[in-house]
Every structure is written in C-alpha cells, then in structure tokens.
Length: 270
Length: 312
Image 1 (cartoon, each protein chain N blue to C red):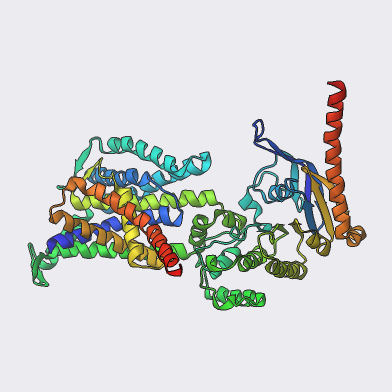
Image 2 (cartoon, chains in turn orange, brown):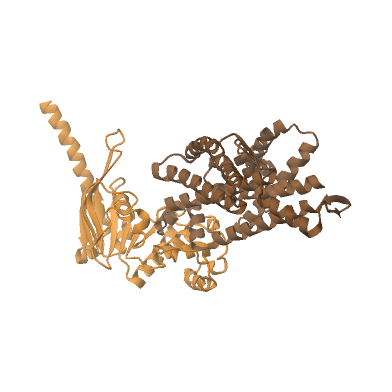
C-alpha cells in the first residue's frame, strides 16, 4: 500500500540551523493497517508524516502509494489519496467559512472544482446526517462560521472532512495533543469509529503511549530520524506502557553512552 | 444636485475598483499594490484602442483582459519565486508605468472627440427625450442625460456584483475563499493554492483595469498619473462598506464595497465643495484609512479597560 523507501531529509543544509530530520527511513504499510508512530521530540515522527503528505520533497528515496510513485508530487496532488488531520485544531478548517461550506470543500477533495454551485441543498441534508452522530449539536448550526467552535469540535469536524471521501491513507499528526484530556478521549473514540467503519489505512503520530498501546495494530518508534523499533501483530498486542517506557529509557542511555564514549576517547587520545 | 448625480456615477464606476481591492485584500489577504498600475493600464489600453477606432465595448473588454494579465504576473512573481506580496505588487506597478507610457505614446490621451460607451448612452438619451432635456428631481433641475449615465453605471455594477457573488459561491470560488482563509487546510483538500492566488490576482486586477477604462471614458481622458492612490481609495471604500453592513457573508461584503465606494465619493465631493483643497485629498484619504484600521483595536482596548475599572 504505502512504501517508504530509504528516504532522507535535511533541513537548512549547510547552515548553522542544519537539522537531519530523516535518515534513510524505510517502512512498508499494508492496506487496512493502523500504525501508531511514537518518538521523542525531534525524532522525525511528524517529519515522516509530512514527507508522505508532501509538505516538502524528500532529498533522497522514493515514496509509493498503491504502486504509484508520488515522491515528486505536490501536496495538493497527493491530497487526492490522502486525508489529513493536523495537531493544531485551527489548521484543518477555514475559520471564517461556515461549517457547511467547510464540509462542502471536503466533499470535493482531490476532485475537479468547476463552476457548479458550491453548496447544493442536497448536500446540506447529507451534512446534517454526518454531524449528528458527533452529539455536539452542530446539525442545527451548519451556517455558523467554524471559527466560533471549540478546538475539540473543530478537530472532530476536521476528522469528518478528512474521511468524507474515503482516503487511501489517513494521516493523523498528534491530532489530540492540543486538546484537554476529556475532549481528546472523545476525539480518539471518534477516530477509532471512523477508521473501523471504513477500514482505513492509517498512520497516527502520537506522544501518548496510552493511545499507542490501545489503538492500532502496529507501533513504530522513531529516534533521531531513524526507525528504532517496529512492533506488529501479537508482539504489538502484548506491548504495555511500561515496555515502551523501558525502550525509551534504553534509547536515552544509548545516547548517553555515545557522548560518554566520545569524551573518554577524547580524554585518552586527543 | 447634478454634482451629486455625477459623484454617484463616478462612485459606481470606482465600485469596480473597490470590488477588485475586495478580492485581493479581503478574499486573499494579499496587499496587492499592482492596483495602482493596472488601473492606469486599463485606462490607457481602452483609450488607445478607442482612439485607434476600436469599438469602445470591445476596448473595455480588452482593458479588462490587460488588467488580468498584469495581476497574473504579480501572482506568478509571488507564488513561483516566493517574493513578498507587497514587493511583487511594487515591481509590477513600477513596470506598468513604462508600459502605460508606451501604450498611450504620451502621458495624457484625450477622448473628448471620440465615441465611447458613454457617448452611446448620451445618444440614446438624445433620441429618447431630445437634446438638453431637463427634469425636476426633489425640486432640483437635472439633465436627463446625466440620469441615463447614472442608470447605465448602476446596471453595469449590479451585473458585475451578481456575477462576482455567484462566482464566489461556486466550487472553484469557494476554494478561492478558503485559500485566503486557511491555505494549509485547502491544500490538504487537493487545491492548488498557488494557482488560486494567480487566478485571484488576475480577477482582481481585471476589475481594477475595467474601472480605469470606464473612468477614462467617463471623464474623457486617460492620464498616466490617474492610478496614484487608487489602492488606498479602494481600501477606504471596502472599509466603509464593512462599517455600514456588519455582515461577513460574501454577498453583503460585495454590496458593502459598492455602497462604500459611492458614499466615499459623495463625501469627497461634498468636502471639495466646502472648500477642501484638492491637493489634500490623498493625505485625507490615507488618514481616513489609517484611522479606520486602528479604530476597532482602540475601541476594544477602551472597552477592556472600562470593564477592568468596573470590576475593580
């Protein structure tokens, strides 16, 4: 389904701000699987997601989706196959436009937008049925600007919008990180429902180990721009939060060894 | 009274300019200063074509296309080469000054002896109600001819407003509005935002050039300086419109821009009548826009400090 083949990305190469964000990362994701991507800050987990979404073009490597090479495609071209929800609840919706206009925009994801009427009456009926299960009372407020809604409501709508037309791949970038715990739980519930219903292939970046343990069928742990661990199947099912914490600790200690060894070598030989 | 009618007519013509500024500033949040050049570009193109014997309607349409081309260049400079919107506009505006001189071949081109769109309307009035016909409105005597011109401009503006409103309600128009509102979101929904900005700037400057073409025909000349200050003028109209009509939906903002343009023109006409030095017009317009821009913030602060005092 999605094949990431030896991709690398360095930001601001040759300057003091040079950051090696991805180093020779390869992952293959099967159709219908739900992958949680974990990692420390700056580990490259969001960068990997953005590389797939096309926010930037990778320096090296190839990305294919359903055997189509999308490595050089622009963000808007990939949107034909990819649905996205961002970390910032404000990023996924147009604040000054109404709920129904936002939904109408999503119903045309990756399609030609001609000079047909943007908001036909038939669609509005459909929207009412779409937002009703959210239990947020939005079905009677479809004409309100989306900017007046709370972060949780906006994130729930963004999720609906990303999946309104079934995407080949759903990318969730820490989409509950900016929400309070109660709202986050609600949005995660909704996420699970949507993914189960349409059997969506999903990559979810998260910093919550609880989410990673509870959700999905695979955990990829990133560290320093590389895939450090990759658990799937029974192995993933057996994984507990404590195991993940131990692994993170291991990674940290490895880093410490690196610097310790370096200073030891420096002391002895330089 | 005939002063009021004349001012309203010019206000309606300049409403096209306000609509153009509305597209760039409000829809795309793009401070597009190309307007100053494309306004003159439209006037110059229409004037030279009319002098060359082209049908004035066709000449106006070509002026519209010329403006679109100028706007598209600004859009391309900004999106393709990552140049700041203001600077992209300044580059095109500056270049257009030379282009305009070349188009006209001189700095001022009179149209008084030529047949323009407005000559047609005057002839229509002539055949309908005879030469120098006058009528009484609210106790004032006015030329019937002026009323015909006013009616014509009104109908033209209504037509453009409806077309523009319809356009921004279509799928592509909705995508354009979303581009200005949240470009990240609409890119994730598969819209080429760079293309939207280019098309949007083309549309905006097309309207502005048409305003220039119409004004040149109405006042009977095109001048290479006539675009100076037009962007702020259009902005003032849009701001006044938003103040009168407190509604953010596209239809009402379009209506507001037209009302704002007419009202602003009338205010200026009255101020000039009362003895305002015409040389001071631009500084007053600039001050007006400045105050209109900072006023909402000031009022908010005032309200907040008032509340704080009330709570203390």
